[in-house]
Amino acid sequence: MAALASSCRIASSTNTRFATGMKTSFDMLNANAEFAARDKAELGEALVATLFDAYEAQMRTLVDAEAAIEATSNVLQQIPTQWTEYVATELKARFDSEVTKRKRRAEAAGEIRYLEHPEMKKLRQLRRMAEGGGGAAASAADEDEEVQMTQELRSFKCPILQADMQPTGPNRPVIATVCNNKRCVFSYKGATSVYSKKGEKCVITGCDVKVKVSDLKDCHEVAESIRRALQDASDEPPTQSQSVD
Ligand SMILES: [Zn+2]
Image (cartoon, rainbow, N blue to C red; front, side, top):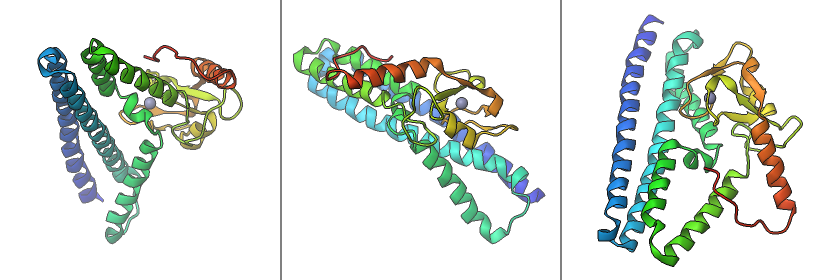
């Protein structure tokens, strides 16, 4: 067991270096976007749009890579303490399946995992700045995107169960207060199926906090948003609303 634990430690420290590298990659990508936004007049509308499309695609790749590193780190941390009995030949398969399970869980959040990522928000902000003064066509496309984003955020899916949350009842939103951010919101049903009394690592990508059942509190803010969204949906076709930013 000692040899396994020490291998895990070595692998974990490599992963930590990857994670540091991720931060650099995000910074470089947004630095390029800043240049594009600054030089928009010289580059021209079409090129700026092409560049930002490419940056957004790269950003998605980075967000996925970050989630993959997160998943392996998480499993590596568990091995020395929780895999007390194992067969050496089964280790690889078990590791892979545990990592896949975590990646699936991250993917279950859907589009929101990209849209709500702070680096993607920064990039989209730069894009709005770059394309803001770019004539009627560009701003119409921008508005379309805004509407689409709002609709996506309005689906209010539980990241664990991937089911729509409801303002009340077992699918009501609860927030993990210890995480100290507004991202870690789940349905009560989903959260209580994953988190324990002892505490489990938060399932939201990029959040390392240990969450206990007692840390879950009803999230009135999101419940209210869901209530409003449901109301809007039952009203006439939704009118343009302001960004959720
Ligand atoms: Zn969290």
